[in-house]
Image (cartoon, rainbow, N blue to C red; front, side, top):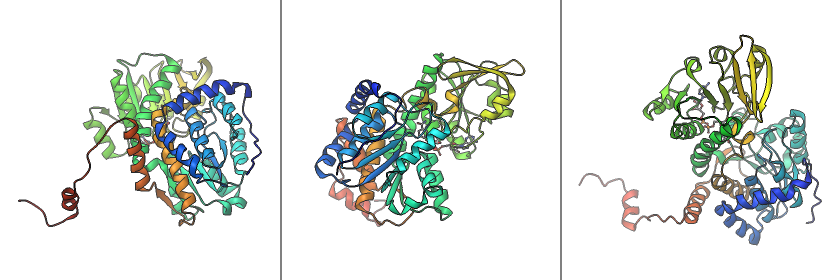
Length: 421
Ligand SMILES: NC(=O)c1ccc[n+]([C@@H]2O[C@H](COP(=O)([O-])OP(=O)(O)OC[C@H]3O[C@@H](n4cnc5c(N)ncnc54)[C@H](O)[C@@H]3O)[C@@H](O)[C@H]2O)c1
């Protein structure tokens, strides 16, 4: 099939720079490379259209090219108004991807792009935050029948989709890529841990050693960030609402306290909860002069920015992604990247090595949906075979070998009558 390529990017002349970025990412994504080689031969997605709403980064470009190599028509938009790498978007446009993405979008631009990719009447959707699924179910019901399934990349999206499933509102099956072990154990933990620090440092260039570093949310992302901040010499404080996670943070050696107490001592604050108004007026009233506040959770609602604006008499941009708010009482609070995902807006998102596994799950789950069309409508975990395959391929790429069960061990693990000898 011949596809006509339409796209909208910031500047097509950036394509050669984008090509170098994508080449660099691809070198660090050996699992996806192996999948692509197979897809090129087997063309499992021939005659399928995929609509993807993902952060348009160099790693996403490698995924988009993998899906195209499988025979799919790929329409791509960004999953955040601030996370698109314009060089990468320009490059993808030269590679036959229908890309609608640029950095610094208004909310209107953002949903225009989502609607553009939906105009391709996709059979499969790839989402990061469930905005495509939301738009399809609310505003584009006319093309819902065409969709056989979708995937979801992040925790927040999975939460939204499970809520839709519970309400009986979900109209097609979704594979929760986020919930694969080879996704959240590495992407959410090591990816967010490292890249959130990267974003904060690029935006501020501060020293972390000796600073009180407050982390809201001790889930997979929060754990990763706490581990890395501690490694940089910061004094880590955790806030939680879940007693088990809070206890885990205590046993991991961190100070745990309510946000209202942490507000009094923190130098740097980062939210990673998937919740809203985690930092709000009552907290900002207690903060010290000069603090830095950032978010690495999916949506820009974790920090109550309207509260901050109401409390401020002026604001100015000091550096890219760093805005100083002067409060009515004279204190200055610094907000990074407009409260959007700091690792993507102020840095480059997760390292390619991590996205290799997340996107291997995306590619294989897309193939699974196409091969198993007719699945009952609900939110599925990534099939175990796919999760294990991704782990095995990654180990192989890292030249790490592991043991195999002997027949005696297999038998032992399958019996119930063996006990104390
Ligand atoms: N920055 C990135 O690149 C990136 C990557 C993966 C996930 N995410 C996003 O990060 C967020 C967290 O993801 P996760 O996988 O760690 O989720 P998770 O469910 O494992 O952890 C979230 C934690 O936040 C806690 N929490 C909820 N409300 C809170 C509150 N008011 N105060 C303190 N803690 C609170 C929960 O108890 C939970 O332990 C989600 O929005 C997810 O989509 C971002």
